[in-house]
Image 1 (cartoon, rainbow, N blue to C red):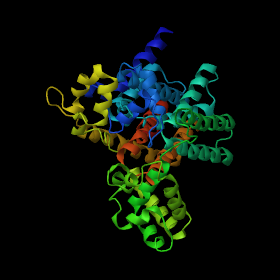
Image 2: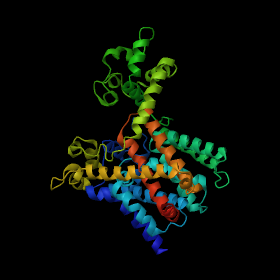
Image 3: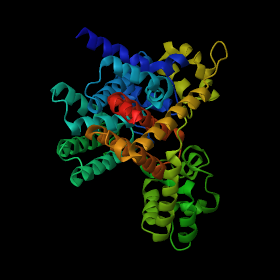
Image 4: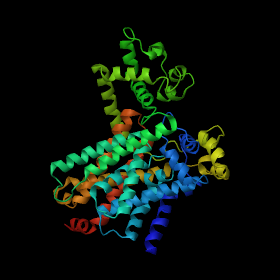
Length: 455
């Protein structure tokens, strides 16, 4: 019992290596908004409040180190449970050996160490598999899976869309009969939990903000995507002569990109009254685009090649290396000074902010090794599945993991690139699972792999 407690309490510290290296939990430009939303109980226009509540609850109003420790604990727990499905004989020591390279050179630890909700995209996959596979009948564990599942869907709107894609993919796999003899998925309880999560999101928004909506800013983000893809300009050029849309007045002076649309003081969004004031007019334009064959085709074409581009956006640390965070005007600085005043000096002395020895956060070497691990893992997987004799090494558990990871990576690329933009931060949050899959296959099937090597 003591060994188990020691394992689960101290093991997660391994996933905080990036934060220890930095000298403080890693922050991103959105970190300030998340802190403010939770500590001041405000629902932002551009994101849900749930990750802010996560910060409020687990920081205890005292330290952001506690927040990333809980993230690391959830990451550690979920990955261990997934690994036990893939390899039932996995020991604590073997898992720690597996975790070491992931901690040092993958997105698992870098996202667990950030005050950002990106790591929850992995929790969606992990909790879904753990709920569907039903290997753990202990009620406490199943309650934890359900809690992680529901909360992970709340922190980022894209997670719900990705989850629906994953459930549909696994449902089709189940109905195909390919794994029917080995795995019996239980979809109904999972779908009930999904429905409850939607009600929870809408209900909390109504309680705090009198707005019974899942998201307040979806219309703006999608309009930003239409702007970046060129579809908005084409639509306005074609339609403004015959129809009066609010953005027709800005047709010849649209912002350069979605960032300018969302945040520039001279943006039509701001000039027309902001996020809520533009909701009806923007939805009219979006409806017009999605019901116009020409513009729907343009959007689909852009979404397709953007999704392919997103698949290879895998650099660690996008947005982490910035001198802006040390400025008093930056949102992370402002909110840490306001709500975690005792941590302001440690924050300013982190590598992200050029510490006392003028050391900066530099991920060039980390990315080099990480990409090396990733490409070697991809090569190993391609070698494994390309040969019939090698492919049979993958039993039904490993086949399930391979399929689920593949679908998560593809769906993550499609959803983020189609609804937002292509950016390394959004894809690197899940691409590290390729390395984990390779490591768990090597551990679980070392005898079979050795036999292949000898042939």
